[in-house]
Structure formats: C-alpha cells, structure tokens
Length: 114
Length: 111
Image (cartoon, rainbow over all chains, first blue to last red; front, top):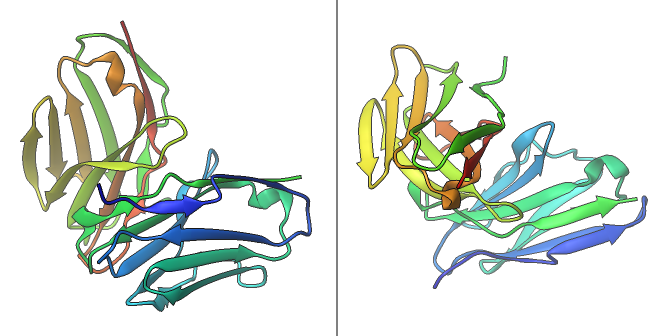
C-alpha cells in the first residue's frame, strides 16, 4: 500500500527554535508539494518540486522558510526561526509528473509554536 | 477575490439525505476539477476528478462542472455518517500546474 509518509506527526516548540519537517513521497512519484493548512486560510501551496528541482516557492516566506529535496526519497521543510503564526498543519503530497489525479497527501505534521 | 470560493459550512444533514456541495471559481482557464475528502486529523484524499465540463458519477458521488457559470458541484446520494468530513474542491488550468483549493465545507451526517 503506497503512501506518503511525514515526520514528525506532531511538534510543539518555542518561538525562535528551528523546525524541520520531513516527507517521503510515494516511490516513483517525481513531483512533491508542500502545503500549509489553517482554519483562516485553508490549504495553501508553499512550494513544489519536480525531479528534485524547485519549480515554485512563491508561497513561502523566504526569510524563514526553506524547502529542499536532498534525494528522490526525501523532501524537507525548515522554519528558522519559528514564530507563533507558523502554527498550522503542514502537508506533503506527491504526484506522478503533472498528473493531478495521482496527487496523494501525507498525514501531515501538526505544528504548534508557543 | 480568491480564485476558488467555497462555503465553509458547517452543513448538517440526516442520514439518507442528498447532499449538495458547491464551489465557484474565477479563472476561466481552469480545466481540471477535483474533489478531496478530509477526515478529521487526516490528509485530504482524492474523491473525484473531472476534466473540463460535464458530469462524472462514482457510486453515490456525482461531480458536476458548469464552465459557463464557473460552478462546480459534488452530490452525495444516500448520505451516511461515514461521509462526515470536510470536502475540498480544487482546480487547475493544466496538468502541470499546482491545484488551487477551496477552503473546504465541513459536513456532518447525523444517524
């Protein structure tokens, strides 16, 4: 049963600390998305990669957020320094090329910044 | 104006009712239309996928797209308590651009 995995599932941290979230896309999927979900804004695209190259990160606050794909099986999203307004659920999703119907989401990382 | 508008609800219906969930969008270039279902504390999962206009049926679920009015709908027949979830519509203008999501409608089906 292929699925996207994300770690950690929950994270509580203090303002100013670095937060790293990890995602393992479905094997064979070459497109990876990072989303943030809040009650106020809904699901927002932060960044996405195809074949490990960043295609669009315009949804990310560049001064504190960074996203990378060190290899085809790992995507990371870092926040440094974290702020209370970053509290949200962060989802990773993967897809096969541009086939939208193959986009599968991970279970999310629930982040609380105190 | 957001590109995709969706009434957040909540919507509460009795078991067995027909449910209608709707979204409007502003970009006439959108061609791909999706409905995702998200259970509490889970990631969204793809429910229905439609390209361009028309209807698509899958069991108790029917997705409908009216491009002339920029209106997309999801109908659930014979709703069940297990259908209680948040339903998100999503759209994009090509297979190579990311989806734009509505904020989701929270549905409760009461037994």
